[in-house]
Image (cartoon, rainbow, N blue to C red; front, side):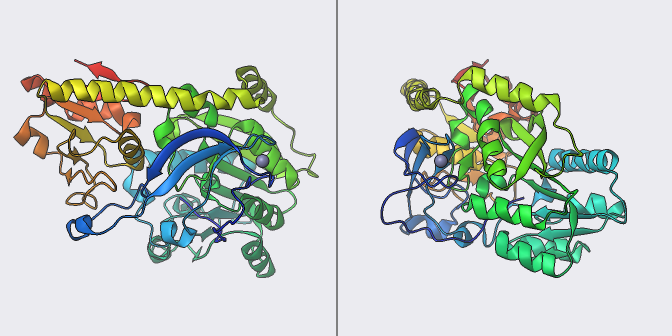
Length: 422
Ligand SMILES: [Zn+2]
């Protein structure tokens, strides 16, 4: 689901805003040094050196875009991406419903083309393809693009930006719908990416983009969703400015529950007055202003909230260990790696984490080196505390793991604040 534009990462004179170019000096949250969150380690790599990068999030004092400085080249992060979208049932259903709605709302058919940026293994385009709508995917990770092509979904293996847009347009690619799910936040050269969409979209075309909503991140203290692949953290106000700079108008927005709370924005050419701006746009803009998203001070309070959460979690863990309790984790996801590295919670505290993905079992978490095991291990070791790192799935996990209550085990959820479920 992700793509990025390859770009230079070295900067001599300090970081600059990826939207407006202003020098960045205001800290949103400083999570210290952390390895890339998805770089799980095989047993042989445990004794090798590991690279840690600053996880320092800034807020631009001019345009208020919350963002991470870019340290690693996109090729390193995304070149052989391990995430196959088709593995998640709930995400597939999300995609299927989206496709049905787009076909109905915008009258897509055999005469209209759909282009998806960061099309992954073709899991979403497949639904358009099955309904007879011509599709094209653009996906930089060669290993996942290959799966799409084998399924009959035409896919360009490359990063998206103005150069790609011009080449595709020259070859006759004319998308009526241009979409990207969880890609905008991952783009280092934001202006090149949005500028490319402006160039590729037909005059009456529509863009939809989904990304995590900064208002939810802050309200629900989801600081663990900050990791090196997420370059930008958007409010509706900031994303609207970015699109407007490139002659694109946001005419509708939906608030979704995916990824802890996301926005789906709908854009059209500013020149295309035939599509009216829906009332929800003004309503959400007003709500963000009322919450302070148009003022720098609002953003500067978040760092302290994050530090307090760390102290509370460490307090809880220290007490648990002093009392001799065994602790394991659930979910070897990127967000857990941010949390554990930032809080300094490693094997002294957690015996192992379990995860259902066979690709992760037998590996170790980056930085903390906590081993990743099959969920069956829990019944063998009967831990007293299970720390749910994948808090977005906590109800599902508490259901699956309900048997830990047989031996008095308890669930603990760290976000938004430490909560114990007896
Ligand atoms: Zn800026």
